[in-house]
Length: 138
Image (cartoon, rainbow, N blue to C red; front, side, top):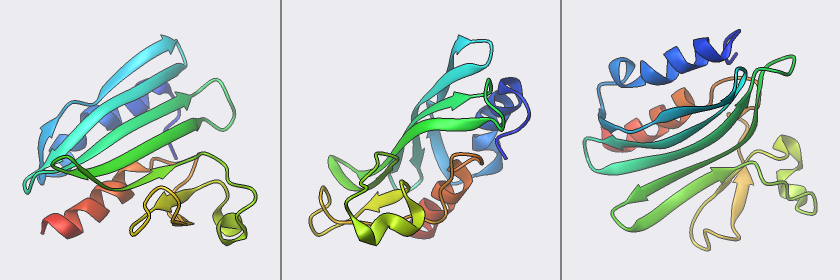
């Protein structure tokens, strides 16, 4: 779950660097647009230089609370390695099982998409993504 309140989610976000020692630099910011709606923006830089760029729109005015949309990108230097987004692709039957959650991967990273069953609108995605990047870091 995302937590019961936006304040809970803010605490979760700002504690990430303490929870994951592989994070070297942390620039995530929770930008409130209302008492129960916010954007999370910024990036996490890991010990080996991989960067996880984050954009989330979180809504606690809905029941259950959820991510309204998200985008996560993993970079090495100036090269975007892969990314996740919640943009629907209803005409791609390979993505139907996890619609709209998917991952863009090489070789044609813009058009090559695979299902992302580990992502959700109703629970925090960042632990899964950080653990994925940590597997590369370690």
